[in-house]
Amino acid sequence: MTSVAPIPLRLLPDTARVESDGELSIGGIRLTDLAAEYGTPLFVYDEQHLRNRCREARAAFPGGVAYAGKAFLCGAMVRLVEEEGLSLDVATGGELHVALHAGFPPDRLVMHGNNKSRDELAMALDTGVGRIVVDSFDEMDRIEHLVAEGREVPDVLLRLTPGVKAETHEFISTGQDDSKFGFTVSTGLATAAVERAQASPHMNLVGLHSHIGSQVFEVESLARAFEVVARFAAPLNLEELSIGGGLGVAYVESEEAPTLTELGEAVAEVARTTGITSRVTIEPGRSIAARAAVTLYTVGTIKELPGIRTYLAVDGGFGDNPRPVLYGSDYTAFLPRAAASERPETVRLVGKHCESGDVLVREASLPPGVVVGDIVATPVTGAYGHVMGNNYNMVLRPAVVFVSDGESRLVVRRETLADLVARDLG
Image (cartoon, rainbow, N blue to C red; front, side, top):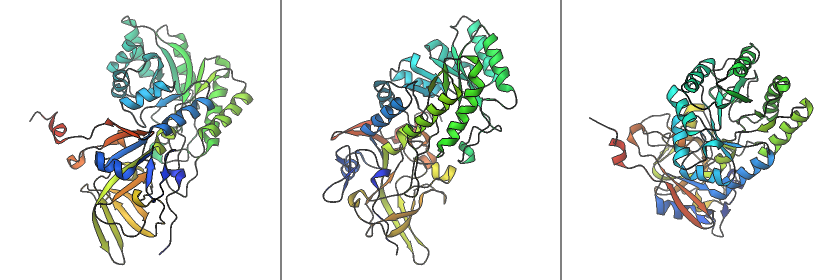
């Protein structure tokens, strides 16, 4: 049996602390107390961590920061982003509605999407969205038709495909030429898009945008993609160049990830060497939200198979964290009641959905003595968990709480059985 060290604080939110009795607290509240009060599964977000990362991003990119709402979005997060002075990136009419419903200033919204419908674009124009990131010639057609009907001319950025492939899973790699996103630089589509946008009286071209993928660990890849866009933009004298988002985070002990500050320094160096005068903006999502949260589960079944493995089944699964199933993503786990303990036991942490692939952590290291009813936690679940949640097997989606300075508040209530049939007309 190999001994594994206690869960490292670098995988936990900024305010995570191991109390004198070995229990873990976040925001001054013990996780076991949160589980008892709100039930499980439960997303627990460290509000101070979110604010710290927003502030780090603003310092690293003084040209502007738009939080990528696709990583984690709810009314409380929208208001936090506004309070921290960031813009907000939305990618669908649904995300736009959530942002507006929470009172976010429309002129600080950035509208994304590779296939924006006429209705979504009309909604963006009618509500005064500050920037539309145009992704195709078909989208230009729709914008021109909508403006011709009497709507205001929008400020737009063109999304370019720089031909830089990120070293990440193919499903979240978007910067290579073979991509559904953007105008490809190498094929001449980007040049044609710029010429059309500049000639159109129905759109105001203010900048260029690129995004090479998500969970990118190599700052050099992001800087290289920005250099392609910067050199392309040099003769255009545009107001803004956005490098998109995609900076990776460490999910397990063996990973190391760069910081927003390090990315800012690399991008600033490219700006200096290329001589561009445009303001450089960024759209971080995962790097702000991921490590801010842990997910709490209750152990319901322990199945020991001597010589094979032990299965630890909890009351959630890929309904609240589909990333392991979608991308083969790895996570770690710990017991909040024994956060200071070594973790020599290896188990497979699985969910309650009727799929053998419903695995949260394939090789989870835990302390000995786990029993039914224990609370087990998976860290770094603040991005692409809550927003990707689903109802397979009609499992209820979890609640979300924010914690700060010894106080907790419910920001998304737990789904109810009534919610499951609210849209059912049968």
